[in-house]
Length: 510
Ligand code: HXC
Picture 1 (cartoon, protein in one colour):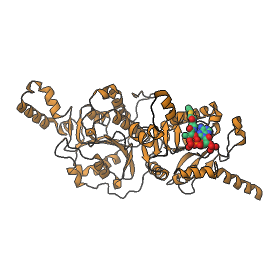
Picture 2 (picture 1 turned 90 degrees about the vertical axis):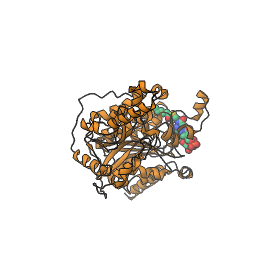
Picture 3 (picture 1 turned 180 degrees about the horizontal axis):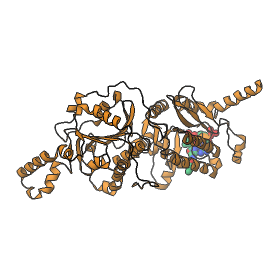
Picture 4 (picture 1 turned 120 degrees about the horizontal axis):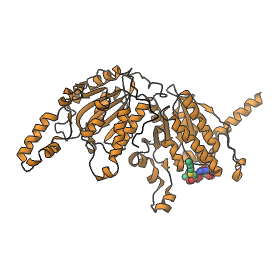
């Protein structure tokens, strides 16, 4: 018996070494943690339970039968984050470069299946040279099995991908189908074809970092939702994100203890809106003054900054925030901001996270690049996402809500539950100057007349009361009381039940 126990320990020790000390040292030398060290940082201490530690590949080509490391380049299992269960896989770059074989894929699929069955999020730590070259199509089949499960799990359990090394070729499509992708600066990259192929096909000379590094994907492509300095920071931030999310689509998000008075008044908000309607202000100030303890977890912080998306808590409960940012492009909606916000709204709706929308939007960005780029279809995504969402929706218009963008931004007409406006709100088809130039075109040569018409238009429409008289705005509120109003609104909506008509699925304009 003793021998058997000892053998188990020895086998475990060998498995824990992955591809061996030399390769572990090389991993550390690049500033990267090993697959096991990452799991330790991600999960609560001693909470990790491993599956398939001894599983090895079945490949017999290219002499592979002589090299069968236990675990086959991926560590899988479950554990807890602040006491709540998650499933995790962590690719081990020290074993065949973390490449995906048939058995490596089977290990991932097993935890995907368990996560869906048992209702817990899946977190994938990706660090892989892609398809196991020695296995050929068996490896491609393995990828597709993982993809199919990503799709089935979508909207059932939250799926989070962290890219912590290479992620290339078709391998990028598994993370791409998950809810959030985070990258580590300077040590991770994602691309469908690498720099060498790019050079051959398009003659472009580009580095891996430029082509698919964290900066590219958080600022240009929007493939990734956040970039962090190193492995440690990335894993700590994933823990923070998981705390906002429900375990699955049948559960509500967790309620955390809070140490902030729900009725807290913020007198400084009364002067947040500048005198001049064209002067920007920072919408993030409002967000942090509304949320519990000023905490805000921003998603896609570096992309389409004219709209802000992220999570806060109100009375300890998770709330998704979508807010126009007047500091960037005057807060207008365009292709990128519509796509960014639409995806966020749909995530919140999948997982029963109520949505707070803060509106200061002068309209959609005009121009050929927007029209040629399909702003009609992309803008419709956000409209569609808000309109189909059945979660509690509370909207506060702080200043401008013009034109189609007024409708889009969780207006009453898209089943907004509480639609508030500050006294500074201007709800109209367009700004006074533009409106005057159209409806009083005949007076365009007469500056005095135009000024008078503009003033007249401002008096009539540059306020929230026309909309409030029609019931499109439920109440005009004092800025200082916004946190209290919004918190009470969401509290009153905790038992909201709203169902869309039966359908196989909708046909959102993709
Ligand atoms: C088998 C692989 C491997 C792979 C790396 N290794 N990638 N083994 N299959 N795909 C092994 C190496 O042989 C090496 O083994 C170890 O992992 C570390 O690799 P290095 O090349 O020494 O590391 P580094 O210099 O850091 O380069 C990392 C890399 C490079 C950029 C990932 O290894 C690379 O380009 N690999 C091939 C990538 C690739 O073309 N994959 C297929 C993509 S197509 P030793 O024993 O020396 O430690 C694809 C299709 C998916 O993935 C389709 C899904 C639908």
